[in-house]
Amino acid sequence: MKFIADVMLGKLAKRMRLLGFDVLYDPAYEDNEVLRLALDQDRIILTRDTGLASRPLAQNRILIESDRVDEQIQQVVETSSLPATAILTRCTACNTVLTAPARDEVRDLVSNHVYEQHRDFLRCETCGRIYWKGTHVRNMERFMKIK
Image (cartoon, rainbow, N blue to C red; front, side, top):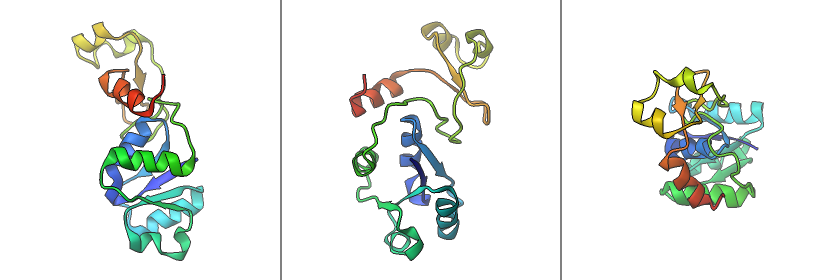
């Protein structure tokens, strides 16, 4: 299942990507672009905008009720009946699927502390960001009750 988030839901998009969901998000997307991409790519629209949600082309949407990101995630997961089981598989910045580089390839890209504390790293081939299972990932796993 794929999603597209409107301009009001940047934090939700980032957090859902961390959980492994495919979520398009760009704060520059206007409502018509969100609708076009949702239809062209068969994506569910995530919005807090009742005007956008009421448009005839926005039938495949979830109208987000809360302004708290944790509650927003719960609503999306419960509404779409999707378990979040692929934590840290997508770049939180650009939505690209992450790859696993050899550990020595990231030596100069992370701090000495991070490099010494972690064995496994992930890299976004699009934007170059490096990821590892730090406290943010463990907190999300606890939040979603994933072991």
